[in-house]
Image 1 (spheres, rainbow, N blue to C red):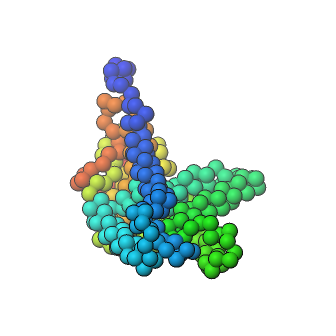
Image 2: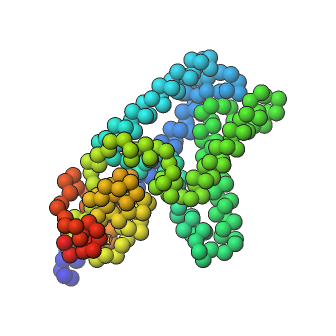
Image 3: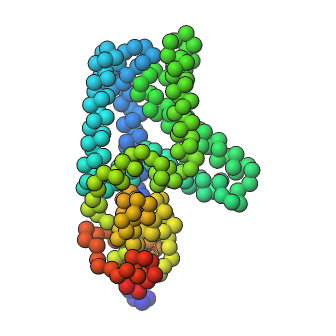
Length: 288
Ligand code: SF4
Ligand code: SF4
């Protein structure tokens, strides 16, 4: 055993965390685009000034709306196509709401748990208010010059404040409950569960003999699944329909990380290995 451990190099930091790193890069890229496109006026509607911009050129509001409607159509098609081929990768790799909710969930575990004191709970509320405001501004920047919030004489002043407060309230609810939003309430998530989906790549327990039942994969699944067997279950909340293909389960599996030359417990497969009912129900996960 000692010889094997010595002759097998330990995985690098990237190898141990590759999906977490790649996913965060993908999320940040999407957020960067969501910020930069309206800031550079590549596409932006400015309701407060009654004008719009396409590729930096000022156009009428009506002309500016056309590409927005087009982009929304592309978005709906993209989500369906991704879902049909790869499952809910939109949730796990693209949606900024999912990213914010994931970060929020980490703070929730520290500041809003049964042992949290008053100060920690207040910190969590303040943190949630700030992230909700930032999230609202991220989207409102697409439809208005944000300075409108300081110009009382502008006719959009009151409507924009009402929209801002409504959006921030909704985002506050979303972020306060963390990943539960993605699991239960998100309309895009529900839409993906009820439209046809096919997870071409399925995370699952590929080597039951190696699994030590440490449950690290379970603890780190943002969708509260048991990643070892969820791909065999057809259920909106406990099965493959809920999996967002984040592969946190692969990154967190201690047996995928310990020694490079040993078989890994969790893996990604196209075809699921046959398993009996005891495995699927969780009675004999490590003895199949
Ligand atoms: S089962 Fe794995 S890939 Fe699916 S949501 Fe859970 S951690 Fe992510
Ligand atoms: S699959 Fe990996 S992380 Fe999950 S319980 Fe088994 S050894 Fe632990």
